[in-house]
Structures are given as C-alpha cells and as structure tokens.
Length: 208
Image (spheres, rainbow, N blue to C red):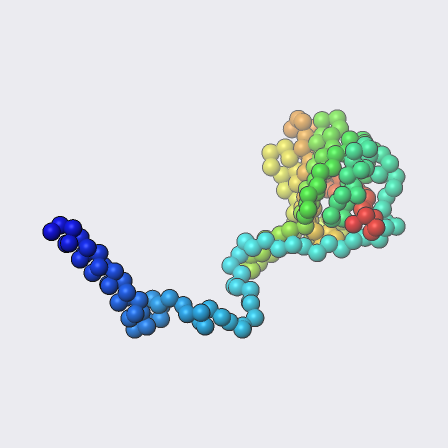
C-alpha cells in the first residue's frame, strides 16, 4: 500500500510540472522562459553606460627617431639597454650619468618602470598606457608645470612624486631620500629637475 501511495505522489508531481510548462504562456513576460525567436536579435551590439572605473587604453604619441638620445643609452647598463627595445610605450630615462649608469628597466604589455640609485637617492619612474574612466569626476588641473605639461607634485613623508601626461601616456617620477635631512628632499626642486631632464630613448620605429 505504501508503494502505491509513493507512485501516486510521484505521478502527481510529474503532472504538476507538465501542467506548469503547458500553461507558461499565461505567465507575465518577466516570468516566462525566452523563446528561440526572442533570443534572436538583429540589433547592433551597443556599449553599456559607463558607470566609472572602466579601464581604457591610452594611445601613445611616438617622438621621431631622431629625438632618441644615444649618449644616454650608452651610459646605461647592458641589461637596461637591451630592455629598451621591448618597451611598448615611449621610453624616458634619467639623463644624469650617476643615475643612467644604474638604471634598471622592467616592462609589460601596457606599462614600464625604471629604477636607479646613487648616493642615498632612489629614483623611480612608473609609466602606464592605461587609465580608468570616471565620467562623473571633473579632472583637476595640476599644481605645477613640468615638461610643458600640467603636473601634480606631492610629498609623502620623505618621498616626492611628480606625475604628468606626456606622449599620450602617464608618467610618475618618484624620489626617495635615504635620510630626511638630505638637501635633495627638502623641497620639490630636485625631483622636478630630474623630471625636466629626462631623455627619450626609444624604442625605434622598426623595433615597435
């Protein structure tokens, strides 16, 4: 008797499911399954509303090959020189011999970074070919002019940062002093001077 009751319950449940499927057309459109015809669309795909924070790729503007400073490249370590041809963005490096001779270069598809050290000073340059879009945020004008561009110059403890856009991409030069009493970090002048004096080092057009 128990087995018959179980079978009857299962049959009843199955019929309930079948009836629900058969009557689905009577449900509100928001609750119905989409039909194959409804899934087809001839509309051209459109980009959704930009909410903010979406990543976009910057388009670099390449200086001419005749602007490459070969004398600075010659001062760089061999590892740094060989890394220049792998850059996917316009390359700037420190021009002063004491920094150029210790410059290390790292790079990725849409970024590169350099590092140099001399006499208690560490100088970094982080370069990005990407940005994030915030359409509801009005851009701020930089508080300085660097390399004929609007720039932000800030200090965090003993680290000075100079940030600007050039060649269509973003550059961020950092200067860190080993001791807070070092004269190079008493104000922004030395960091800005390093940024102003950066040299273009390629890569050449045939290496891109």
